[in-house]
Image (cartoon, rainbow, N blue to C red):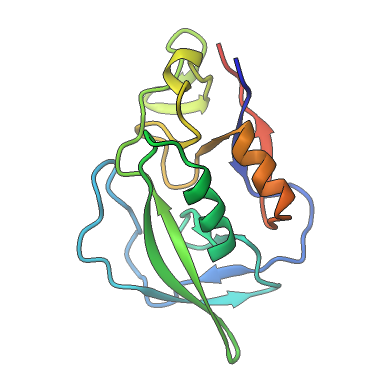
Length: 174
């Protein structure tokens, strides 16, 4: 049983900024499943720090640099479905393209006996080993816009590429 890791923002103080979408007044939600159709690129402003590969933002979404996107695309398994929604992040005259990572087909991968829930909210996800086998980049239904997981192979590629702005925490699995 190979290990999997949850992708998180770093706990320690980092020099990385936060991208802000000023024009978005309403709550930002992507569909729980299915591809996003008719996406119009967003423009966000970077505040209070530097660009990172996994960029925090006020939309609460998975905002990835082209480098992180490339790693995830090339290391995802044939059964992983990823959709990329482009975003432009600006800092003064520096404009960089980023991508929101969306999962059109989240997988039913939580161990029902060991996952801790509060109503419909997952407090502590515990992955079911059989369900995640054959997956490398994924999330589960109802996970929200930030929770996602990678295999040890993807973790190694992220570490080798020295991607910034993220932390990989070993996911509990049964």
